[in-house]
Amino acid sequence: MIVIGIDTSTPQTSVAIGTENEILAKASVAGASRQESVTPLLQELLRRSDLTLSQVGGVAVGIGPGLFTGLRVGVATAKTLAQVVNVPVVGITSLDALAYAVRYSPRRIAAVIDARRKEVFSAIYRAVPGGIVRERDYEVHAPDRLAAELQAMPGEVLAVGNGAMLYRHVLEEIGSRIEFASSIVAHPEAAAMVELAVPRLLREEHDRLFDIVPLYLRKSDAEIAWDRRARGV
Amino acid sequence: MRLTMRTTSAEETREVGEALASLLRMRDAVMLCGELGAGKTTFAQGVARGLGIEEQVSSPTFTLIKEYSGILDLAHVDVYRLDMVQDVVDLGLEELGGGDDVLLIEWGDTIEELLPEERLRVELMTDDPAGESVRSISISATGTGWSDRFAELEAAMLPWWPNT
Image (spheres, rainbow over the protein chains, first blue to last red):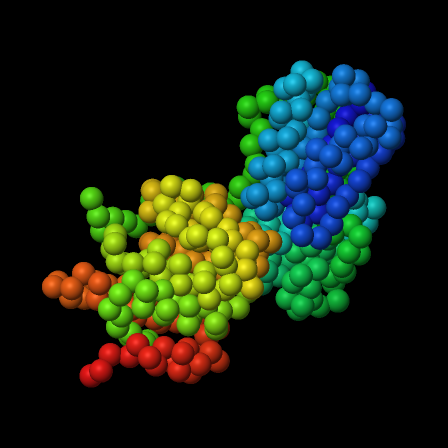
């Protein structure tokens, strides 16, 4: 089964094409947000792999948490593709993909993505045979809150992700129990999305097209306090 | 820290905005407050001119956000049409221009909790019931980010201090 993977949840745009056996092609553009390159990159990968869209059997997409603008582009692109080619789609969280890429470690894994405004998205994992298990819910909080959470946990921690790199100085305060994964694995990779999605696609555990939405952790039910300021007529 | 200026024409209000622009840095956030017709967009036009933006700046009430490129890139935002805090969160203000844009937010005082800790508040008021064009403009800073610039700001605003 040929699966397309897309992730745009960080300033890196990543696309990949793979099967249950291998990654056939992949490309990532890092730096400033470059989501406009998603479709051209995919076209290029298909062309170089001598594939057409009609051969694609599924789409894997990073649903965040991450940057709003990027997520919306990535999720919309993935859904459109899936609908046009009439194949199933699977949403994978960016934090799962980060942790999955560094799972060969006896340490607990803290996946941390920069959420801007001095906050991070994070989740805690441990490796199990064949994959990872998430131990805590996805969170958005200040880096020092994450540090306090890690401090309270026993054992050694591997921190991965662009948020871990950015707030290394804060997380380091918990002492020598923490180690930092390299910057080359600091962004979710579409290839990881493909690997994580293939088993689910093969088991037909895909998501319903319209159920896939970006994972916005900063949900708010609050109304804007217009009563404090008259909005005129 | 609070400065209060007085202007007697739309052009003068633009000049105050222009003078403020000379002190702005990447990622600064400026809330524009005041009733409808108080001159928020006029002030924004001055800021844009000061940032070397040649494009015509109009009210972003219906587009919510308009971005301009200049010496510094500017995002002109208006939350007037929005009702839910989530709608503002969904604008992804912190991501505009890769996070580097200067933010000018009309009615920004209603969503202060979503704005950077360090920000300027510009309040425009129509002062004089007889003369529609008379405005008082107050500028105050939140957080410490402006403390090193406030003296410069004070100097830049000197021409419009009211004669009291």
